[in-house]
Image 1 (cartoon, helix red, strand yellow):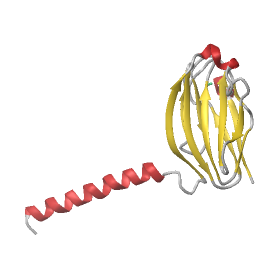
Image 2 (image 1 turned 60 degrees about the horizontal axis):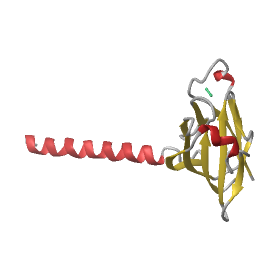
Image 3 (image 1 turned 30 degrees about the vertical axis):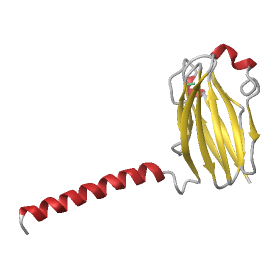
Image 4 (image 1 turned 180 degrees about the horizontal axis):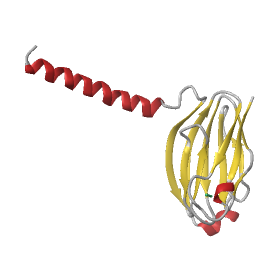
Length: 157
Ligand code: CUA
């Protein structure tokens, strides 16, 4: 083997690593029965939340055969609705906002999580395969009761 061959081998090894990382990041949640496929944000006024069609009455709504939208409010120190109930084998787009301070929305044991900023709507689309229960926690420090801020996400058969 000459130097040139070694270089080629290392280059190939580096490529395999990079592809491996991308695959891990993209498909890291496969097997947990839940995967985040989209993540984006929209702006709204925190004062308008209680008047808003979606967030005035936090809920899950069916919008297609297997498609749902979940309007979730994170506030000191609860999530609404609680529990969030979605059917198995569905695609759910979450819209999450806060009327007060920065919170987090994290589905325990999955890669589904987002920061929840007052005046912004965090949006993410998640696929749910099997029925099971998940915990939801706030992962951004939001005040004295931050550590108690938790909810439930139930994927029902
Ligand atoms: Cu809400 Cu920490």
